[in-house]
Every structure is written in C-alpha cells, then in structure tokens.
Length: 372
Ligand code: SF4
Image 1 (cartoon, helix red, strand yellow):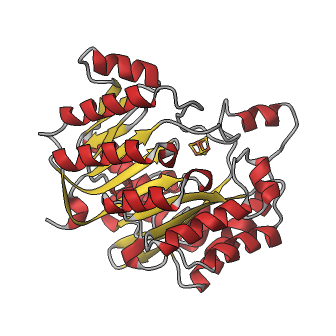
Image 2: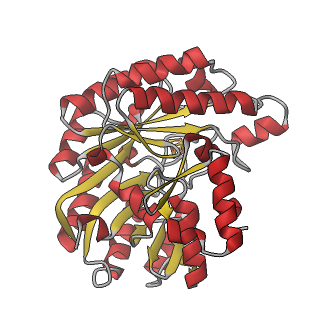
C-alpha cells in the first residue's frame, strides 16, 4: 500500500488568543476549557483505535494549536503516539501563530514527532495585519520564521491577499519577504467575507469593502506566475510547493477522498462512503464525551454519483486534475470538453483533464461546465 493511502488524523484545537476579523473556523477566545477539552479529545481518540489503527499524516489545526502550553501539547501527542501507529516518515504538521511559539515549545513538539509548522503569517505589512485583526506584527512573524528554520522544521507559510489596505507592490513585498526563507510550502488565500464574521459585519456597515474582481484576478495571476518563476509548483488553487516532495500530503487526502479521522469540536471525518462531523461547540463536545456518547452532530452516506461529482470538483481544483473518463462519454460531454479546451480553461494531457491558470480562476464552475 502506498504511503498516501493510509488515512490522515486531524485534531481540532479550538482555542485562540482572540478572534481575527475574517475567520469563520470554530474557536473560542479563551483557554478556560483547555483541561476539559484535552481530557475529552484523548477519550474521543480511543473510540477510533480499532477503526483507524494507522495513519501517515497528523495535522493539529484550529484554532491555534500553538496557544496550548508545551505540557498540554506533549500530553496530547504522547497519547496519540501511544494509541495509534504512524508510518515511517509520516507528515506531522502543527499550525502555529507567530505570537504563540517560542524555541522551547517548538523543540518539544519536534521531539514528539512534529516535523512541519504551518505558520499563520498572513502578511508582512503591519497595516494589513491590523486590518485582519491579527495579534502579531511583521517583526514577530519574521522572528517566528527564523525560529522554525533554526530548528530544521519544514515551513509552510499562510498568506492572505486581496485586502483594501494592500497594493499589488505591497503584496509583492510580502511574497518576496517570505521567499527569502525558501519555505517548503506556501498557501496564498484570497480574502473572503464569510457570513457572521466581524469583517462581514464591517462590510455590511460600509466600514470595509472587497477589492474589485479585476484586481483580485491580477493578484491571483501575479502570485501564480511569480511563485512558479521561483520554482514553486502551483498544485492547488491556493497552494504552492517548493518540490513534489513538499506538497501537503495531509490536505491531498481531502482532495482525493482518502479516509481521514477528525477529532475535536467541529472536526470532519471521512471513510468511503460516509462522512461525519462533530458538534461545533467545545461545551457540547465535552458534555457528550463525558456522557459516554460520540460527539457527532451529523453524517451522510455518499452515493456513487455524489462521490463521482465530488471527485470531479475537488480534482479540478488541483493541477493533477481528473481522469478524462470523469467527463463522461456522451456527445454533449465531449462537446462541453472541446468548448472548455477552446476557451483555455482546461487542457487534456494523456488521459487527464487539468485546469489551466485561467481555469483555476473559475474552478468552482468547471464541473458544471464539464457536465452540462
Ligand atoms: S484565523 Fe486562526 S488565529 Fe485567527 S481566529 Fe481564526 S483560527 Fe484563530
């Protein structure tokens, strides 16, 4: 069995020092319930010892995993490593924020197997960081990157573009500032105004506004071309890897329907053909676990057709694309494929359909255009 085919383990750490204005991930800006959560996530893990005995990736996400104390992180990682097997060379990522990591904490998690840090840099311009409601500033981000680098851990830098406060030259400075450290991986997300976030409310009040679509496209295209010119692979709409070996193996599982187990409030899990997800409240999550119940809020069983459609839409978000056969063989499907090729949105290579850069810009609509 190839490495990629073992499931991935995701653990949701739902604590942040404060809430960033744009964020709609589930987290609370208080650490009061950390002890109870830690006890419950350990208990929840044991529910899956038989069905998920082995993984080849671990992803501590959130929330802000690095906001946990070194002792709590060690406690969690030791528990997981005691009860589950990880393949040799497993990718083990911890998300971290510049304001909550230090050398001692990173050294400790490194000794427990974490080999990759996904750092929430977002921007190297203090005006952008203020606009986003981030706690850290440029100097803290640079210091954090240097700490990660000095310990020899793989670095993935998260960046956000498309802010009102950000000009294209300003964004270039951020990207080049990050490239100076040659991270193994860079994620560049376009700012979105998610419902019920503070930023969404500020937009409704007319205090902030999205940039226009033409400029958004210019940011996206410049980013892709610039990073590719520096040797990075644009392997998913928002993700770039320094080499084929440094793509995020854990996230690839989500895009390829490889099974994954999610622990913690709001975490999602998948094991063909079923998907299930946990309650989005740390209080409710702990209550259910302490009552001896699974903290699952809902589940669905995907039909063959749904799995096929999902594979198509997830695959067309990646440079690997989808099998030509996924487009269908009817006359209508063949003609839709030809039209998309003529419009420069996809290219056909061997038995694969791959999105072009222009196709990435409309990736959400490509499956519909392909299956009229
Ligand atoms: S963006 Fe990250 S640090 Fe900010 S609130 Fe969301 S999960 Fe927490």
